[in-house]
Image (cartoon, rainbow, N blue to C red):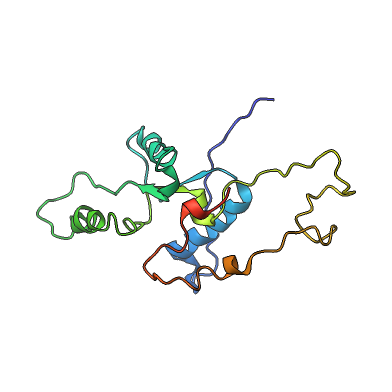
Length: 190
């Protein structure tokens, strides 16, 4: 069977304009939750609906960072700043993002990296969700389970689930360095 992949676009419904669910950040949060169910792709490309990638190799370059065997586990996202062509250089409001992209973002490099600007970004799925791609559990042929589950839940196979270490549950609450990242990609098991 031949695998054919399709690109797709999701847009939330905008029925209730009185709530903040139509704001960009809450819409992106909702779409990220939906993506967790709809796809298992290791990377997520985020673009505004009125933007496009004008460099055909941009996504490929982002993949070079994200899939690098040495530093790829430390990269959460690769973003491309918005640049506008044909703007009036004398208009002080037209170039207001120059300081942001050329000074602020470069100054944050090395201090947990630059901030996310909202578009033009390829995310590492593991950085967003805290876990890698789901893998199918393998059962040994001598397994005595009568159901089709892997024994990881207690729905039909009570007592088979391994208990969680309490220190892992409260790891983030006991952090001494408040400036440190909440979780490190190297600590997350696939």
